[in-house]
Image (cartoon, rainbow, N blue to C red; front, side):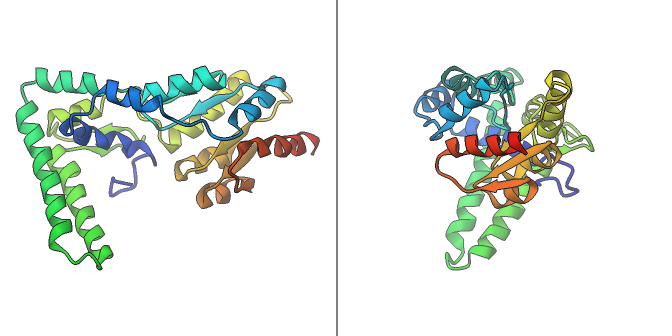
Length: 252
């Protein structure tokens, strides 16, 4: 985790990309156009159709912040819903410009990026570990000291000392990290699960571990950490294979 005390939710550091996106001139429209080229996971349609045939409530939980990708998933796959992080690059730029701090804070970001480039160029490419160490230290200094963000004990981003307007903007978004994923999955189970129903969690990432561990049944796909946390681990290029696994779970 970025926070040295390990308070931040795993996956919630996705919001740290915001200063770099703003500096690079990325817009919501650019991300939306990129989303249109996203490929559907092989077998996803078949697998989701099977779940729906079993009267299952199917909800996606993601740390991703881009609403465009989620809209496409809802439209193309027929999910009942997606819980993710809502934030807009365009809105962030608007707020930063309105604060009068755009030039100063973008100059700070540009200087940070230049330092990272200098670290890479000034060190022997064969010593990857040393370069990673130097970059890690520079990243930590940038976000903790220059931007001024951290996380509280609830895993929410905070702005100790209100260091920058960028920090204030980033702290507005309630990013769904590993804790929120698990909490949301449990809430869905309590609110929508039938008395004799079963919750099945599926994930492939490090930030899915708690959700996978808490579910009645869980499947970790194509990820060592996810597989360790889940009750079943699968390596596959076509997730329609999960249909047979669910049938086995139903019959157990």
